Every structure is written in C-alpha cells, then in structure tokens.
Length: 550
Image 1 (tube, rainbow, N blue to C red):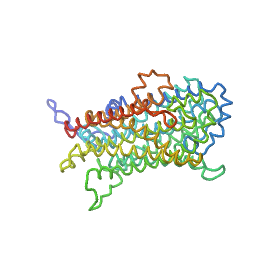
Image 2: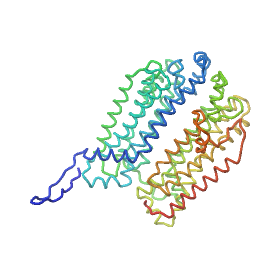
Image 3: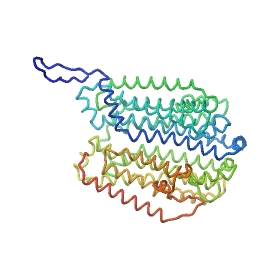
Image 4: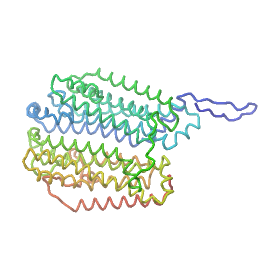
C-alpha cells in the first residue's frame, strides 16, 4: 500500500501514514461521478425515455389490442425476430409494447456499465493517472472500488427510472418492476465482467475485446437457445447467457423476480474475482501477458498501423452488420402481419419510413437505426486517438517522420471507410435475403444498398464531431457519445414523441431521405457532407495547434 509522510509539527517527528486497500474510495468516487456528470445522466434518461415513449406509442396505436396481438402472433414467432429480440413474454399489450426494448435496452445498459468501469480503471491506469493518484494516500483497491460503485449506481438508477417510467405510461406495475429487474440482472453482471476484463489485459483496447466479446457470446448463446426446437438440449443455452437471464424474468408475463439472484451472485463473484486478480498483477500490467509482435512486420505506414490496431474491432462490427442484414431481410416477409391499422403504418413512417409499401417503410426504419449504430463504430475509431495520446504511445510515433495531421487523417479515413463498409454490407445482405423472397435479387440489392449509402452523410457528421472534440476539447471526448444519444432521440424518435421540428432538425439523421420508397433529395445530403467536412477540418486544425499530450 502507499505510504506518505505527514507534515512535521512542533516537537514531533514526522510520522508515516499507511493507506489501507480502500482508502480514498469515496474521494475517487466523487471525482469519477463529476467526470461522468454528463454521460451517465443523459444515458439513464435516454434509456428510460425510449422505453416510455415506445410503450406509449404502441398503446396509442392499437385501439383493439387483443385483435392486433392475435394477428401478429405468427410473426412474433419468426425465428429471425426471436433471435434478434427474444420471445415475447405473453400475448398482452404491455408485453407487446416492450417487446423490443426489454433485450435491446439491456444491451445498451450493459454498454453503459462497460464504459464507466473501463474508463475509471484500465483507461486511467493506461494513461498514467492512477500512478499519480497512488503517490498520495490512496489504497490500491480504491480505483476499482470507485469504478464498480459508480457503474452499479448508474445501472440501479436506470432500472429504477425505467420502472417508474413504464408505470407512468400505464403499464402493469408488477410487469414494470420485472422489467427493471431484468435490466438490473444484466447490467450488474456486466459491471463484474468489465471489472474482471480490466485486470486481465494491460490496455483499454484489450479490456474492450474481452468485455464486448463476452457480450457478443452471451447474445449468440441466447439467440441459439431461443430459436432451438422445443425439447432440444440447445434450449438450455439461454440459461448460460446473462442476457438470457434477463429474458427469463419474463416481464409482463410470469414476472420471475427471483432470477435477479443469478445476476447478484454473478456480480458479487465477478467483482471479488476482479479484486483478487488486482492483487496478482503490477500497476500498468495485466494478468495475461501481452504478445510481442513479429520481429519484422509489414507495417510500413501509419495507415497500416492504424488498420492493424483496429482490425479486431472492424471484423466484429462487420460480422454484426452482416448478421443484422440477414435478420432484417428475413423479417421483411412478415412485416404486413404487424400492420393492422393506418396508425401503425404512420408510426413506422415517423420512425424513418418513406411513402412506399409497408415493406419499404420497414426497411427505411431499420436502415436509419443501423446508421446510428454505424456512427458508434466511427466514433469509437476516432476516439482511439485520444487513448493513444493519453497512454503515451503517440509521442514515439510523432518523433518519427510521421506528422500529427497524417496520423489523425489515418484515423479519420479509417472511420469513414469502416462506416461505409458496414452499411453497404447491411444493404447487400438484406437485399439478397429479401430478393430471394420477391424473386428480384438485383433490384432489391440495388434499392437497399442505395438506401444504406444515403445514410452515410449523417454518420459522417457524428464522426466529424468526434474529431472536433479530440482536437479542440480532448478532455471532453466522451461528449461524442452523449451527442449520438441525443441525435438518436431527436432524429429517430422525435417525430414519434411529438417534438417540434426545429428541435428534431438538430439531429443529422432527421435530414436523411426515407429510402427505399421515398424521394431522394440530394441537397440535404450535400449540406450534411459539407458540415462534416467543415467540422472535421476545424478539429484537425485545433489538433495541429495544441500541445501533445493535451
């Protein structure tokens, strides 16, 4: 533990002050909460707001709930839909109103827990700030304890606020409590998962690989278990996934609150394991040793290095978008079963659909939501610059003939290319899958690939905003994620929530054409591209003029 010398007082010799393992936890917790004073409140309010607004819209759109649910029962059993969102808990309006948000909201809550824990443990350690804190009266376990407590508080606040919001829009009180329990079960588990991942590797990138990889495996196990035939042993895979635990709570169905015990046990076990692993490693290192690179590699440029460092992330996102394209394409044939009234079609139109058929409206809605996800990929790739800078790895690179502008352009170019590739892949796969149903593969592929490409200007604006923050306000880089959440709420849900036009126009996604089926207006897309270029240019200029590291 850290030992410091107390000030000398008259008549007394200096005395040593020894910090216990958790000394300074409260102080570090206040510091972490202050640093996340924007990220956590915005994320909590957004998650609870999406549940409430989605449920309210569903309630308003179905004047005859039982008839509507009976009509879509077959569609709800579509394996692709079950793999994506899980099975519906019961044939009630409340369960139907929260069908998508139970699992998807839990995934986003897990991401919030991951971001908070990683930021205040491995990222702080990698950038050298924990070593400075350790020079004071701060226990070795205090940073990890503070990060776990903050993430736990964020998960608990989200679950409580979401429960209150669901009850507020008229959903069943017991089912709403079960919804909060489902989210709490999954969120707490990912606090523990990320805490362990932060001890295993010596980089924030490695922590991301373990924590997000575990989330992907959990999602896959749940999907396989949910879509397996009745009586198949594969059905048990759902119980091996923390996401499956949240699903098994059966909110607005059987309301199995006892499933929370699984999440609490997993949370406690993983957090204890994280503290045990912390004692087995040195500051700045991980339990698992880093693999040395080859003695002679083919990285002859900064662009090649940037691509090499991001290859795992790129492969994971590309696979995810290919799978998403297959799911969206396979679901298109059942879309008509969901539409039992003009009001339902109007809801889909407000969510981004165009003026074509209901299938066109469905594709436009899903493609716009996927564009928001692609923006997250672009932001993640750009904000790596800040991580490289804070960890000290940038300075040796800039000591070579590589300039900071070329280094930044390599990251920006990779982000733009990656977002383009994943969106095109989504459109191509969805077009092939749906084209086999309609008998017009070429036409469907062309329409959906074009629709996916039309969303890229809005995605590039988000990427450019991240570049501006890295260049001009490097300590506030996390605001790029808060901005993306705001853009999502305003652009994709603003019309559904009845927000004024001037407010929804703030989001770049509000200016996208509703393709396929809608009219292509090129001017707004050109304006978005110009805005992205100007904002990115300002960010690059600011980066050239400021100190490295900031």
